[in-house]
Length: 263
Image (cartoon, rainbow, N blue to C red; front, side):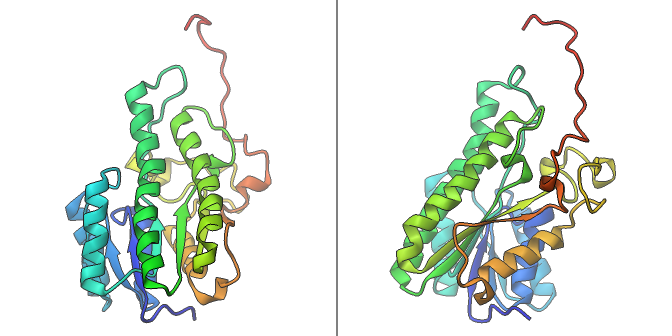
Protein backbone atom coordinates (compact mmCIF):
# COMPACT_ATOMS: atom_id res chain seq x y z
CA UNK A 1 0.00 0.00 0.00
CA UNK A 2 1.23 3.51 -0.84
CA UNK A 3 1.68 5.52 2.33
CA UNK A 4 1.92 9.24 3.00
CA UNK A 5 2.24 9.26 6.78
CA UNK A 6 3.84 12.46 8.02
CA UNK A 7 3.08 14.32 4.77
CA UNK A 8 0.94 17.43 4.35
CA UNK A 9 -1.09 17.86 1.16
CA UNK A 10 -2.90 20.87 -0.27
CA UNK A 11 -5.62 20.10 -2.85
CA UNK A 12 -7.26 22.90 -4.83
CA UNK A 13 -10.76 22.50 -6.19
CA UNK A 14 -11.37 19.90 -3.49
CA UNK A 15 -15.11 20.49 -3.42
CA UNK A 16 -16.70 18.36 -6.16
CA UNK A 17 -16.04 15.19 -8.16
CA UNK A 18 -12.33 14.49 -8.78
CA UNK A 19 -11.06 16.98 -6.20
CA UNK A 20 -12.78 15.48 -3.18
CA UNK A 21 -11.82 11.96 -4.29
CA UNK A 22 -8.17 13.00 -4.45
CA UNK A 23 -8.31 14.67 -1.04
CA UNK A 24 -9.92 11.61 0.55
CA UNK A 25 -7.47 9.17 -1.07
CA UNK A 26 -4.43 11.13 0.11
CA UNK A 27 -5.90 11.31 3.61
CA UNK A 28 -6.61 7.58 3.59
CA UNK A 29 -2.92 7.04 2.80
CA UNK A 30 -1.98 9.00 5.92
CA UNK A 31 -1.54 12.58 4.71
CA UNK A 32 -2.94 15.58 6.53
CA UNK A 33 -4.96 17.45 3.94
CA UNK A 34 -5.83 21.10 3.42
CA UNK A 35 -8.94 21.28 1.22
CA UNK A 36 -9.20 24.40 -0.93
CA UNK A 37 -12.19 25.56 -2.92
CA UNK A 38 -13.50 28.98 -3.89
CA UNK A 39 -16.77 27.89 -2.23
CA UNK A 40 -16.12 27.78 1.53
CA UNK A 41 -18.99 25.34 2.15
CA UNK A 42 -17.65 22.85 -0.37
CA UNK A 43 -14.14 23.12 1.05
CA UNK A 44 -15.48 22.42 4.53
CA UNK A 45 -17.62 19.53 3.28
CA UNK A 46 -14.53 17.88 1.78
CA UNK A 47 -12.58 18.33 5.00
CA UNK A 48 -15.51 17.06 7.06
CA UNK A 49 -15.77 13.93 4.91
CA UNK A 50 -12.11 13.19 5.58
CA UNK A 51 -12.52 13.72 9.31
CA UNK A 52 -15.58 11.45 9.28
CA UNK A 53 -13.34 8.76 7.77
CA UNK A 54 -10.88 9.22 10.64
CA UNK A 55 -8.44 11.44 8.77
CA UNK A 56 -6.98 14.85 9.52
CA UNK A 57 -8.17 17.72 7.32
CA UNK A 58 -8.93 21.42 7.34
CA UNK A 59 -10.76 23.71 4.94
CA UNK A 60 -8.72 26.53 3.40
CA UNK A 61 -11.15 28.29 1.06
CA UNK A 62 -9.98 30.98 -1.33
CA UNK A 63 -9.87 32.16 -4.93
CA UNK A 64 -6.79 30.74 -6.65
CA UNK A 65 -6.72 33.67 -9.09
CA UNK A 66 -6.24 36.18 -6.26
CA UNK A 67 -2.57 36.36 -5.17
CA UNK A 68 -3.48 37.62 -1.69
CA UNK A 69 -6.02 34.83 -1.18
CA UNK A 70 -3.45 32.26 -2.34
CA UNK A 71 -0.83 33.60 0.07
CA UNK A 72 -3.40 33.46 2.88
CA UNK A 73 -4.57 29.87 2.41
CA UNK A 74 -1.04 28.58 1.80
CA UNK A 75 0.08 30.28 5.02
CA UNK A 76 -2.96 28.91 6.86
CA UNK A 77 -1.92 25.40 5.83
CA UNK A 78 1.63 25.99 7.02
CA UNK A 79 0.44 27.51 10.30
CA UNK A 80 -1.76 24.50 11.10
CA UNK A 81 0.38 21.65 9.77
CA UNK A 82 3.92 23.06 9.83
CA UNK A 83 4.62 22.86 6.10
CA UNK A 84 3.47 21.46 2.75
CA UNK A 85 4.88 18.36 1.06
CA UNK A 86 2.29 17.72 -1.66
CA UNK A 87 0.29 20.03 -3.92
CA UNK A 88 -2.50 18.92 -6.25
CA UNK A 89 -3.72 21.63 -8.64
CA UNK A 90 -7.21 20.47 -9.54
CA UNK A 91 -9.37 23.62 -9.63
CA UNK A 92 -10.90 24.31 -13.04
CA UNK A 93 -13.95 25.61 -14.87
CA UNK A 94 -15.12 25.26 -18.45
CA UNK A 95 -16.99 27.53 -20.83
CA UNK A 96 -18.69 25.33 -23.47
CA UNK A 97 -18.33 27.75 -26.36
CA UNK A 98 -16.49 27.90 -29.66
CA UNK A 99 -14.11 30.46 -31.13
CA UNK A 100 -17.11 32.11 -32.78
CA UNK A 101 -19.28 32.41 -29.69
CA UNK A 102 -17.06 32.82 -26.64
CA UNK A 103 -16.63 36.31 -25.25
CA UNK A 104 -13.25 37.71 -24.31
CA UNK A 105 -14.36 37.89 -20.68
CA UNK A 106 -15.32 34.20 -20.71
CA UNK A 107 -12.02 33.29 -22.38
CA UNK A 108 -10.08 35.21 -19.72
CA UNK A 109 -12.04 33.72 -16.82
CA UNK A 110 -11.47 30.16 -18.07
CA UNK A 111 -7.76 30.58 -18.71
CA UNK A 112 -7.30 32.65 -15.55
CA UNK A 113 -8.55 29.88 -13.28
CA UNK A 114 -6.87 26.96 -15.01
CA UNK A 115 -3.53 28.50 -16.00
CA UNK A 116 -2.97 31.57 -13.85
CA UNK A 117 -4.47 29.96 -10.77
CA UNK A 118 -2.27 26.90 -11.14
CA UNK A 119 0.76 29.14 -11.58
CA UNK A 120 -0.03 31.27 -8.51
CA UNK A 121 -0.64 28.35 -6.17
CA UNK A 122 2.35 26.41 -7.51
CA UNK A 123 4.68 29.37 -7.08
CA UNK A 124 3.57 30.01 -3.50
CA UNK A 125 3.78 26.35 -2.51
CA UNK A 126 7.06 25.74 -4.34
CA UNK A 127 8.69 28.62 -2.46
CA UNK A 128 7.48 27.06 0.78
CA UNK A 129 8.84 23.65 -0.24
CA UNK A 130 12.22 25.14 -1.17
CA UNK A 131 12.39 26.93 2.19
CA UNK A 132 11.61 23.67 3.99
CA UNK A 133 14.47 21.92 2.20
CA UNK A 134 12.90 18.47 2.14
CA UNK A 135 11.66 18.22 -1.44
CA UNK A 136 8.08 17.65 -2.42
CA UNK A 137 5.66 16.56 -5.12
CA UNK A 138 3.25 18.56 -7.26
CA UNK A 139 0.57 17.12 -9.53
CA UNK A 140 -1.36 19.25 -12.00
CA UNK A 141 -4.66 17.92 -13.28
CA UNK A 142 -4.62 18.27 -17.07
CA UNK A 143 -7.15 16.66 -19.43
CA UNK A 144 -7.41 14.66 -22.62
CA UNK A 145 -8.79 17.96 -23.99
CA UNK A 146 -5.29 19.39 -23.54
CA UNK A 147 -3.87 16.79 -25.94
CA UNK A 148 -6.27 17.45 -28.83
CA UNK A 149 -8.86 19.89 -30.06
CA UNK A 150 -12.54 19.59 -29.23
CA UNK A 151 -15.49 21.51 -30.59
CA UNK A 152 -17.10 24.11 -28.31
CA UNK A 153 -14.30 24.01 -25.76
CA UNK A 154 -11.69 26.37 -27.13
CA UNK A 155 -10.73 28.04 -23.84
CA UNK A 156 -10.69 24.78 -21.87
CA UNK A 157 -8.62 22.94 -24.50
CA UNK A 158 -6.16 25.82 -24.70
CA UNK A 159 -5.77 26.15 -20.94
CA UNK A 160 -5.37 22.41 -20.36
CA UNK A 161 -2.80 22.25 -23.16
CA UNK A 162 -0.93 24.95 -21.30
CA UNK A 163 -1.05 22.88 -18.11
CA UNK A 164 0.86 20.10 -19.85
CA UNK A 165 3.78 22.34 -20.76
CA UNK A 166 3.59 24.28 -17.50
CA UNK A 167 4.13 20.92 -15.80
CA UNK A 168 7.26 20.20 -17.83
CA UNK A 169 8.70 23.68 -17.26
CA UNK A 170 7.98 23.50 -13.52
CA UNK A 171 9.72 20.12 -13.37
CA UNK A 172 12.83 21.68 -14.92
CA UNK A 173 12.85 24.60 -12.48
CA UNK A 174 12.22 22.55 -9.35
CA UNK A 175 14.31 19.42 -9.93
CA UNK A 176 17.38 20.96 -8.19
CA UNK A 177 15.27 21.23 -5.03
CA UNK A 178 14.06 17.61 -5.18
CA UNK A 179 10.53 18.74 -5.99
CA UNK A 180 8.92 16.49 -8.57
CA UNK A 181 6.18 17.84 -10.87
CA UNK A 182 3.86 15.67 -12.95
CA UNK A 183 0.39 15.83 -14.44
CA UNK A 184 -2.59 13.52 -14.78
CA UNK A 185 -4.85 13.63 -17.84
CA UNK A 186 -8.35 12.35 -17.06
CA UNK A 187 -10.92 11.52 -19.68
CA UNK A 188 -14.60 12.20 -19.01
CA UNK A 189 -14.96 11.45 -15.31
CA UNK A 190 -18.24 11.58 -13.41
CA UNK A 191 -20.19 14.76 -14.06
CA UNK A 192 -18.52 17.27 -16.37
CA UNK A 193 -16.51 20.22 -15.06
CA UNK A 194 -19.04 22.69 -13.71
CA UNK A 195 -21.76 20.04 -13.70
CA UNK A 196 -22.82 20.93 -17.26
CA UNK A 197 -23.50 17.26 -18.06
CA UNK A 198 -24.59 14.57 -15.63
CA UNK A 199 -22.61 11.34 -15.63
CA UNK A 200 -25.51 9.51 -17.28
CA UNK A 201 -25.68 11.97 -20.17
CA UNK A 202 -22.03 11.76 -21.21
CA UNK A 203 -20.91 10.04 -24.40
CA UNK A 204 -18.39 7.21 -23.86
CA UNK A 205 -17.92 6.02 -27.45
CA UNK A 206 -14.37 7.36 -27.68
CA UNK A 207 -13.28 5.57 -24.48
CA UNK A 208 -11.85 2.14 -25.34
CA UNK A 209 -12.73 0.62 -21.96
CA UNK A 210 -16.36 1.54 -22.51
CA UNK A 211 -17.15 3.59 -19.43
CA UNK A 212 -16.67 6.98 -17.87
CA UNK A 213 -13.75 7.47 -15.55
CA UNK A 214 -14.48 7.30 -11.85
CA UNK A 215 -13.07 10.02 -9.60
CA UNK A 216 -11.26 7.26 -7.73
CA UNK A 217 -9.39 6.33 -10.93
CA UNK A 218 -7.81 9.78 -10.99
CA UNK A 219 -7.24 9.80 -7.22
CA UNK A 220 -5.31 6.52 -7.43
CA UNK A 221 -3.04 7.96 -10.12
CA UNK A 222 -2.37 11.08 -8.08
CA UNK A 223 -1.55 9.01 -5.01
CA UNK A 224 1.00 7.04 -7.01
CA UNK A 225 2.66 10.15 -8.41
CA UNK A 226 3.04 11.87 -5.03
CA UNK A 227 4.29 8.72 -3.29
CA UNK A 228 7.82 7.37 -3.00
CA UNK A 229 6.87 4.73 -5.57
CA UNK A 230 7.22 7.50 -8.17
CA UNK A 231 10.47 8.90 -6.79
CA UNK A 232 12.18 8.81 -10.20
CA UNK A 233 9.29 10.32 -12.18
CA UNK A 234 9.09 14.02 -12.98
CA UNK A 235 7.95 16.11 -15.93
CA UNK A 236 5.59 13.37 -17.08
CA UNK A 237 1.89 13.14 -17.88
CA UNK A 238 -0.04 10.07 -16.76
CA UNK A 239 -3.06 9.53 -18.98
CA UNK A 240 -5.91 8.03 -16.98
CA UNK A 241 -8.30 7.98 -19.90
CA UNK A 242 -9.52 4.45 -20.55
CA UNK A 243 -7.55 4.45 -23.80
CA UNK A 244 -9.31 7.42 -25.37
CA UNK A 245 -6.06 9.04 -26.52
CA UNK A 246 -4.95 5.78 -28.14
CA UNK A 247 -7.51 6.49 -30.89
CA UNK A 248 -8.18 9.47 -33.09
CA UNK A 249 -10.81 10.36 -30.52
CA UNK A 250 -13.38 11.61 -33.01
CA UNK A 251 -16.07 8.98 -32.63
CA UNK A 252 -18.14 11.21 -30.35
CA UNK A 253 -17.68 14.36 -32.43
CA UNK A 254 -20.66 15.42 -34.51
CA UNK A 255 -19.72 17.54 -37.50
CA UNK A 256 -22.53 19.58 -39.04
CA UNK A 257 -22.50 22.10 -41.83
CA UNK A 258 -23.16 25.59 -40.40
CA UNK A 259 -26.51 27.05 -41.38
CA UNK A 260 -24.72 30.13 -42.64
CA UNK A 261 -21.12 30.88 -43.44
CA UNK A 262 -21.55 34.49 -42.36
CA UNK A 263 -19.97 35.12 -38.93
